[in-house]
Image 1: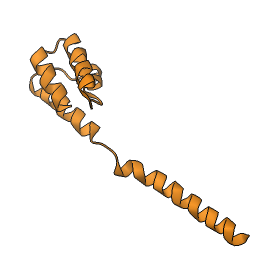
Image 2 (image 1 turned 90 degrees about the vertical axis):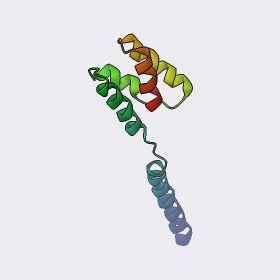
Image 3 (image 1 turned 45 degrees about the vertical axis):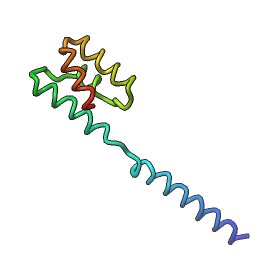
Length: 89
């Protein structure tokens, strides 16, 4: 009986350890991509603030790139610059 409890405890500890490690191994470089987007716009002379960072954040798919572009254009970023920035994001 004690051996069964020990095995269950060991399995539970293993599952908890894996659950803690897997997110670290599968993490993406979203923040690095956001930096590329922001740095591109800064190099083009745009003021960088929370709206630019929000537009550049978390762009992973074509639909999100369109949202990024729309947000940047709404804050008066040149459409060509918005497109390039969002591609970098």
